[in-house]
Length: 422
Ligand code: IMP
Image (cartoon, rainbow, N blue to C red; front, side, top):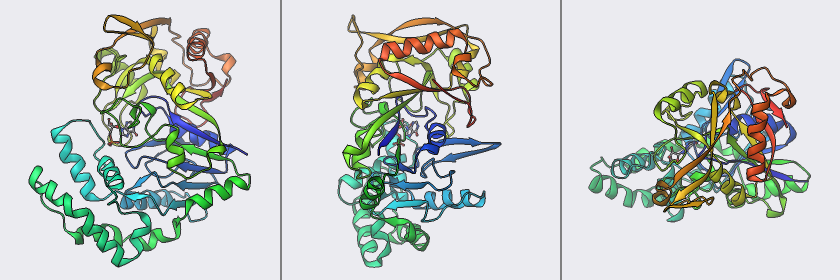
């Protein structure tokens, strides 16, 4: 009996969707525990490309239970659209294979407006999906939760409460138009009937499933370096993608947790603002971006590209007790004669191997690189780890030794089967 976790060990976009989909075979239950539809988990099945924003990436497998935990913030319209789109493509979704926590908070249009308005003042580079403002309401104890939407009196009361300060902020601070209670009510009310059968008490469900011996996989969204507590604050998201978020975002018994898979690209990317010590020069970044399709799955924004930052990866492993590393997108680096990775920083004139999560201080760190010979080989058809070019293996061996954590899988392309067990 065990529950395992897959987390992004970088700034998100590590290829978690593909990995969760691939590993789902071995699990009975797949759980999203934080974030919202700022996430974009890409899964390619045959010729079809799916991008999941709220649904767990186990949804494509038969006989799996997918859970959206209390820690997720849910855009109800986005969720219903996502479910219907997948259903129209033949994916079966019903309360038998999808359950949603009654305690998950809802993202409203006013959250998106405030998110966008705030970006005009302090540019974090958010996805504009209202994620930060929705979590603010949760912690201000004025959030609307899934359980609140089915009783008209409760819902109307909650809408009044949540709009009270927001309209003041929108109108007076940002010169936006006010939003009426009716507008918010209408956003939700149309989806109530559809959503009702999916909503349940996840604490009992998930712990019962665990006690029955079901294997559970937690699917993190974003990445450790975007964690509101441990990431490059303030250039972070508003939730805990780190392993700590699993407990608070699902209610699972802490004793259930066993393996933590940390997913990292063979290089580094970041969307949005914030320090990025290993960022490539624009020409090299553009080559990587084109080759790796490094454009946001949710916003389409070009991702910033850099070399693998081993200082940051080691920090992610220490912080999350990562037991297994999964290195993705090795094929992207096949275009380079040489590949680099950061092993140290110079901070205030001194060499350090410690990651500094404060954005201002991190922006002052000068990266120290180690250079590796490239492999200049197409990896896409390689089926076994042992058949990888020697220089790829040397690169991976260095990562493993430097971090002190085993690499369990590597991924060599976007397809479901382009994953090699180490
Ligand atoms: P927010 O989560 O929309 O508030 O955005 C905060 C920061 O997290 C921004 O830098 C976003 O680009 C980043 N971010 C949010 N979600 C993702 C994701 O799924 N992948 C990568 N970056 C993300």
